[in-house]
Length: 341
Image 1 (cartoon, rainbow, N blue to C red):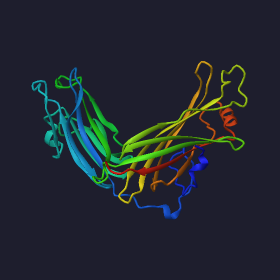
Image 2 (image 1 turned 90 degrees about the vertical axis):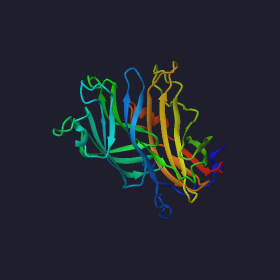
Image 3 (image 1 turned 180 degrees about the vertical axis):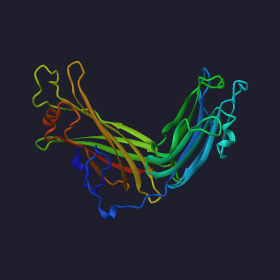
Image 4 (image 1 turned 45 degrees about the vertical axis):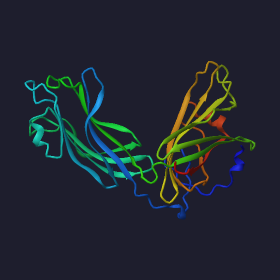
């Protein structure tokens, strides 16, 4: 299908990262943010001697709006000493002094939600690993909040403690883990979203080619796409370079959408473009760039996102600029909610 059949674009949206072209938002396109909540959990995990790594205990999950927080939580693990070789752990909201004399490992952790977008949550996290006893500086962490950004379903280890100590007979190591995602609206959690994605290539002389992919995903589910590679002729490939077959352009990405109660769709679009000169043996320099863009669109609304031109992220920028001259690439996409299952 030629991209000319897609119809006029209805509006443009702002670029958030360097991969995506800067465009303008019309004033009537600005919508108030949804009152979304983040699904946040703090966990202490343990790796048993010769065994698997599994959660021991967790605070949460909590569904938190921006500005809400998990209150200060104390995690404690390990026996009190070699005379008490058993395995013990505790989670409490008491002051850490209540357990500092009884456990070899004590953490204090607190987290506050700073922002929520379609597929990422920003949290301010304060944590410390404390020294046994009531006095003394923390062994790790500090009093200043650390800003942590998590994509949907990501996990991050705040701290990891090696288990090479005689009073940790029950574990090889302990760690404190933070996970976050978006709390789904129960009325929308079973919705599905259909996506149409086109890669539009315009070449010198006005030639135009488009490739089309269809994807369907559940509410909040990430869906990957990848287009067949495009091969551009090399204008003046150096003799003996092994690049006579031209410049290859590979475009792939991810989509994650959520239907809002008013029927609009919040969409996270991740894009990765790789450029490389293909030699006869399949080797060659790979130059990649990528970015993330957050969109809000109406069902069947058409959005066009321009991909960048020549790259400077190479030792041969002039060569890439020459072979990309006159060529442009763009992603055109539509999304629509499907009926509930």
